[in-house]
Length: 584
Image 1 (cartoon, helix red, strand yellow):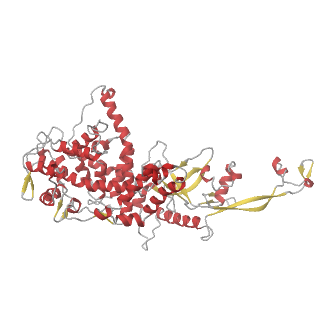
Image 2 (cartoon, helix red, strand yellow):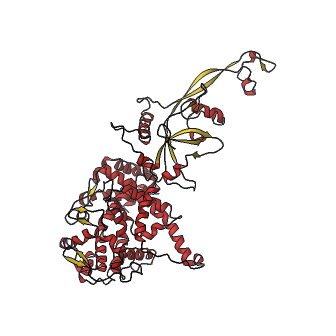
Image 3 (cartoon, rainbow, N blue to C red):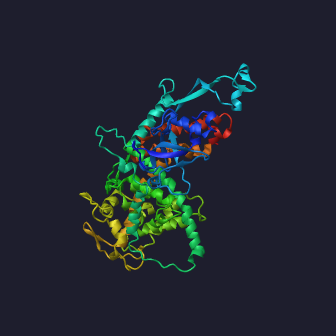
């Protein structure tokens, strides 16, 4: 699959080169192919030789969503295809490496710039009696309609080059310099002084390998599940069909949140973005302030986890297993927060706690309901639902209910720093954080709670809050807790995480790289810019290095210019593009 220079050989339809091919060659396939070979754009036998000549890779091809380095490849064209358009033929291994399938996938290809210059040369037409050639000869040269002597005519010969003058064409020059750098890295030509450094394990690692991480967690979550017998004709029931349709349709909604976090994590890595360290922050308590780590605490790539979630949603129509892991609209922000701050598989064990699954089910079932109070905000409705669910359980400890009430400020009593300090040992125990750090060889309490039969009243029944024992059998520090009681602490931890999960979600949504997603009209674009300006305030309260990421990268420049441009163009022509319109 990989050739001698470290790139990948491919064949592409001729129309890919129409922007550089002389127009007189567009409809002459053999001459067009030969011109590309002679100008070192593709590989082949040159017209001046007899041996095969290998061109250099000049194309960077990438699949969208670009989930990992292995989604991008350096391409060398070794053949062109006639009679088809917008088609590329690649080695069979390409499908596995990039995570593609066989549903007519798209591959985006960027080629180096070429400058095509035409020179006038003389062509020998002796013996060439094609009709059009006769019109290129003078009248004195024609007797009886045929050439009588060796005829010469002028024609233009076009030459292509990828070399540009930095002063005359800086755009072409610097773009090609950048492409050369990208291609060098993709061909594993190390820039390190130590030439033994090799990135093959990253460049050629199949994207589907990332999905194995999630499947590994799924196996643990479902290790206790018994095979459920399939009733005859159940596939034709309304219940089965509606559930299947819902899972297939829902798959597309999960691609965006994780694709955006995939790109955003690169930005936060560049600028060392993190949450502010605070003695009353659950992120600081769990040593999880950083948003710029490459690997999680188990040594797995954070971007691999996110890539796995993108894959899982892309392939949901084929296997909707991801919905059995409680990954949905209710938990998108939470799972992204926990993965990006390095919790790895414990991020899934957290959102799969019985109380978290109950909350998600109630939230999703309430979507589209007619609200009793139309003036109540979406956040208030969500808080009301969460409080109702959390307070509906019997935990066997009054302190839990009091703590939950404080989270919602019921009766004017709010969660205090003393409450956080009192429960901090429980939070650390849930996530396996000790004075000596984190021991990856041991199960965390989060995993143990949903995989250990000893904590269930009836081990043959599903893991639910009601099926968890109320006996205080779990030792944490000097205190003992019941499995059901710890579900209350899971809820409290969830509410403490929410501030950071929502802030991270806002940051991701307000730093989109694709300008098309700023809004389909100026009203939406203005709201996007207002949210972006609000985002900067987070740097003072919640984040470190967020402002440098926004203002020193392209984000600030792009956001302001892209949105203000529309207003500048249409502000004098249409009233709803004016400031006065928005002040009404």
